[in-house]
Every structure is written in C-alpha cells, then in structure tokens.
Image 1 (tube, rainbow, N blue to C red):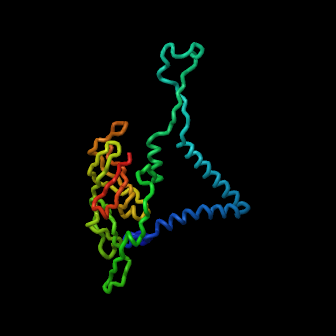
Image 2: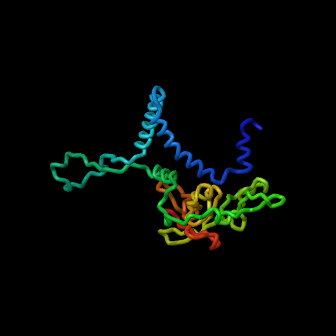
Image 3: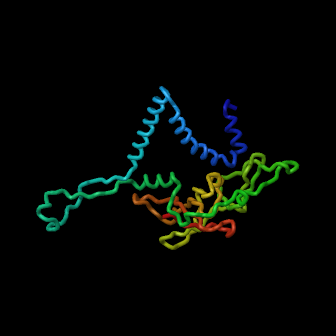
Amino acid sequence: MPQGEHIELHRKRHGQKFDHHERKRKKEAREVHKRSQFAQTVRGLKSKIYTKKRHAEKASMKKTIAMHQERDNKHKAEDGAKAGAVPAYLLDREQVERAKVLSNTVKQKRKEKAGKWEVPLPKVRPVAEDEMFRVLKSGKRKKKSWKRMVTKVTFVGQGFTRKPPKYERFIRPSGLRMNKAHVTHPELKTTFNLEIIGVKKNPNGQSYTSLGVITKGTVIEVNVSELGLVTPGGKVVWGKYAQVTNNPENDGCINAVLLV
C-alpha cells in the first residue's frame, strides 16, 4: 500500500463519523471569525502582507459577482416602428430596447449550487436521529453498537452491492428500497410513474442525502425522457427535479410534485 493512503482506506472501510459534515460546516463558519480576529491583532510587515492578500481576494470576488450580475443592456431595435406611429421630430432617433441580460443556465446553476428551488413544501418537520436510525447490536456477544439500520425509505443505484458485514455501518433494508415515484406535473395535472435517478437534497442534512434517504420534502431527480419535454434549443430533457409530498415509509409509495 502506498504511503499516506491509510486514511483513505480507513474511511472506505468504516465510513466517516455521522456528524462529520456538520462539524466541517461549523469549522468553516468559525474560520471567518478567526480570520477577522487575526486581521485585527496582526501588526507590522505581517499585517501589510495579509492586507495585500485580502485585497486581491476581494477584487477577484467582486469581478466574479459583476460577471454574473443582471444589467441593463441597450441594443438597437430590429424592427422600427410602423410608418406614422412616431412623430416627425423623433424619426431621426434610434429605437432602443432594454433587456435584462442573464442567461438561464447561469440562473439554474446558481440555484442548484445553493440547493434552493421554489418548492411546494418550503418547510418540513425535522426528523430526529433516533427516528431515522435503529441501533443494531453486533459482535459475538452483541456488545458492539456501531451499526445503524435506516428505518426510512431509501434509494440506491442500479449496480448497488452491499459492503461485507464487517464494514457496513448503515444498513438499508431491501424492503424499504424504492426506485420509482408517482410524479404529478403541476401544469398538466397528470401523474406519471417515473424512475428515480438520484436523491438531490434531503432537508434533514447532507449525511441523509448521501445515504439516499427519502423523507417528506426531499428533492429527488426523476427520469422524464418518456414525457417528451424539450428545451428551447430542441434537446430532449432527460432528468428533472421533483419534491416528495408524502411520508413514503407510511404509504408504501413515493408521491412527488415536479418542479417546473
């Protein structure tokens, strides 16, 4: 084994701590305050170097923001007004149209990055860890309690294979695995039985999203190729997001509304 890969190997075998993502998020949030404290207390040459570095960072950030900002774009109108529509004293002036310039793809990417959509259920009840997982005792004398069984509906990919029992921390029962959802199109008022491609965001946290847990309010990606939806460019839309509106573990099926 190459030197320095023992950490990756340990993570692969045993996974990460359950609160790893939450701790990481909090550490990143604290980083801002640490930098502020350092900037206020640093003196001398170090201060000059740090100020120069921060100035460069802020300048690049402003450039990035300005690049994606909406702006008024003036351009010449293609079709002039019809004869007699404009007074004589205005005929020599060029017709100007104003348009908001911001591509839809940039907007979409921004929304996806932030993980925010206009959803039918903006707020859902948070699910406690005890409700989500059941502790499983393992070992020869059932003294070890590091395994967890997921009690909610989950989605796993097509080529999913379980880990050996020694390394499997989170068990997703096959009886609670689902790969299809009843998706309602809000404009067509029609429901389709579509295949699930993946779990995009679970409102209870990143760790549930990575496990593929589906609860009420979860945003899932579904295969809409059979609906015949096309983009303005004429390409067939393959995957679209939908929000789960029921409790799948109670109903035995997944009901969702398509995010148009």
